[in-house]
Image (cartoon, rainbow, N blue to C red; front, side, top):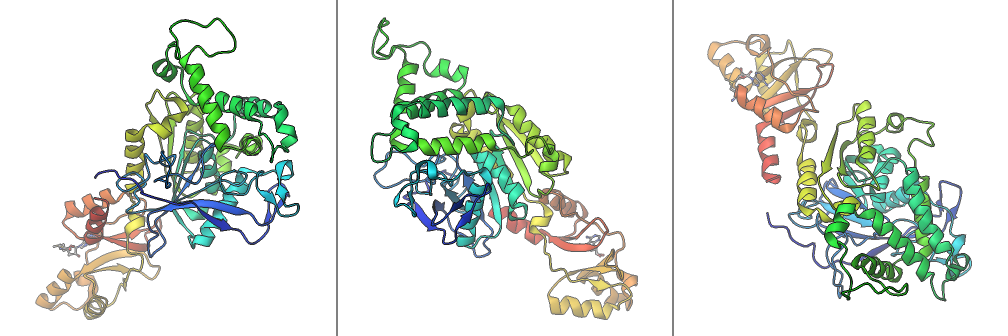
Length: 493
Ligand code: SAM
């Protein structure tokens, strides 16, 4: 299918009416969450996907803003025909609490003073950010997410979602991320912060109305940018090529190399779109993020309440969030018997690959999102008949309920057999009256965690069109039919 754009989009605002009490005791009144949505929420409210953005991201994940030259930051995977297919899914992305792109942060007006918060903005954590997203979902009427997905700092929010609201998420995709900030990640964040706070224009966070700490913020961005690339991608992109000259300048004021010019350009561009205090608050929240609560829990313990299925994606050349951190996440989930797949994107792009590797990202994520298990598609309201009943009773139930397959259960609800319309005809022909005389005792069954493909194969092999789904006690909890499977296949193309 052709991949298309989500089209023209606008950022919306959700004003939170209640005061927010933050994890570390601070309070925020009149906070606003900026967000965008793509696609339509279905009638069952079951197709919502929350996208969590990285450090310098915002709510504009896909499509185009009027008069802008670039699409949203994750346009490669959001839109019709893409992994987050907006013909099927309702995709939501919001700017994080503490941000500067529409959601309340240090540059917002403090209602108490009428001036920007600056350093009066309270400390926020990843949990606070996720709580604000949860309020947005409440506002949109969504009580269960089909999936939550994000890379880098966005991946940390994804993991926090599974810990804070495990019952609200069906599928989870953390990418190029970690369950806690490593010393190296903290170190780079601190250097970035120091660049900002040592800029005299920072003025203790009180620069609004005057010149922002442009030198400090652009330096922080330049440092960050280096960590998002890889040695190999820098060789490929810049080599030792000179910028606008054929010989070295032998002066300290001008730039010689393309890589210098590139970093300088991106540092300056960042100053125009990002607030320095937001950079300080968000990177601090990232540093504090640690699902092991400073080592008082093992990672496996941290994920204990988690119930969703996971696709953990790492990037081979990522040295900022190296693949071993994703492996740790996958192993901790496996230790809890959670259904987890860990895959590594082969790329030279470094950490940024999740924003660039369109083919691999679409393929991997699309495969994961379209995977269904029997529990996802089975009929849950199953009609059964108690053993010892008559053929006539079975025929009556089939007729009134409009069904052809009737599981037979004992007094504890355990499956003991199955009768079908075919068996009832046999009873009529042979003048049999007892269910036990016609039911099949050796029932072919399925479990709710079985992949749908496996159930379909089993039906095919036995030439039957419905399988009772049973739990660990052999009690009937659902029914999967070949009709249901065909409908699913047609939806998933
Ligand atoms: N066309 C039928 C269908 O839709 O399932 C299959 C034909 S087969 C001759 C009918 C027999 O399969 C019946 O005796 C019925 O009890 C048995 N049957 C149906 N579902 C079954 C299941 N899940 N496991 C075992 N036997 C089953």
